[in-house]
Length: 140
Image (cartoon, rainbow, N blue to C red; front, side, top):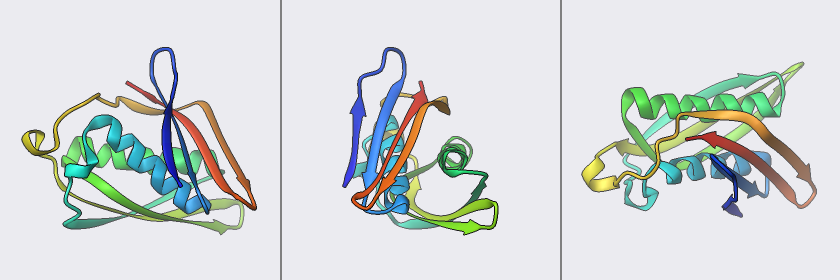
């Protein structure tokens, strides 16, 4: 299970997959941060809880990734390890995640590509008995 980067004309397309939807969401977050810097250099010293809601899986994924991107941009937190669980609440979905990392240090973590936003463009989410697969585009 994991993720891979796919060809895209202008932005970054990611495909993340896992044994469960929560695992696929976790790998999607890891891939997004890997676009920005080398996640292997991030020590998972601090843990933050991230609670999000959505009307469907696409909006839940968008909310999860956007909240993590917000925390990077505003709190300057570099994350490298993620856990996420999806819950159904009637007609809404919610998710609880944990992001582990440390304050961002350009000298330690490096700098790759700035991610401006998560998009719904070309977003797909599939689930089967073999696992879950997510595809999405990051605006860079």
